[in-house]
Length: 421
Image (cartoon, rainbow, N blue to C red; front, side):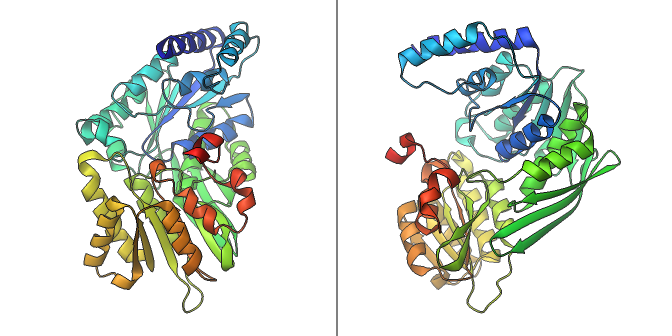
């Protein structure tokens, strides 16, 4: 039955793409996909009608749903019937689709490209997330590169120039390649400045788009990751004939950190939480720790605290990648709450790097981490919370956020399905 529904969904999605011929922008990578997708949709919406993936609709089911603008009916057969009825005779369709193509196992990206071949591909960064399902990291890289391989010659592949793995792909694809980043050629990130005023955070940036400078002011965004997402969006907007200043204005007005993506939240006892609980890969954990260094403690006793759950599905790279996280933690953090056995390995590495034993707390679950934080944080602390989806680190955030009644609005995985898990 599941395969029948997949085939029916794919058929409807392919049918509408063939009928309406939208411009398709597909985003992949190990980190930054959702933020980049969000930024591109905002930049293009200043000029066009745009549809983008709902949440993480990026797999064999999700991509067709995203194309159709539908949410999954779950196990409700009647809702499935109504969905197919709605979609059979659609009269209008967006001019642009901004889709996220995930890769959990070999062949995933090619399967998505078969449903909707991208006109523009964006590759954000690659690290060993989901590597457990591939023979080695090289096989994962090849999977991600499949997206660029599917772009026709009259399209464009947009690459993060500062990711070393992507750097070597510049001449690989049939379509021309353009790059963004601090070392980018076509969208050059010039300056990044973070202004912090209590719980209010603004990131300002200047990005040179082929000689035209876009000045961004991003509310409640922290760290380089938001700027990189906007740089990619500005480059895509240029290729879709959106004026740079118009796209930059839209981003400054509307782009903000999504729930669980390094989002600043007010915490109890006058603390600030950096909620990065959506997921965790080696590159994104290091980026989040780097973002934490923006904060300087203002009083004696104020601390930078990190509560980290495991990075899942790293396979043969798990031990080494967790150790690398432990080394960075020792450099930038005052208190390390290590959640789960894999992150306990990171704690051992932090000890070897000279972190004091009294600065390391080992717990088994997100709930235990939340209870410890609730009892031990104090005014002025900055708390970064992050972990793979399976660790459910949003539970720790909920324990210490100043407005827990707004959890459904502010946190990830607050739907009934997740709350029962």
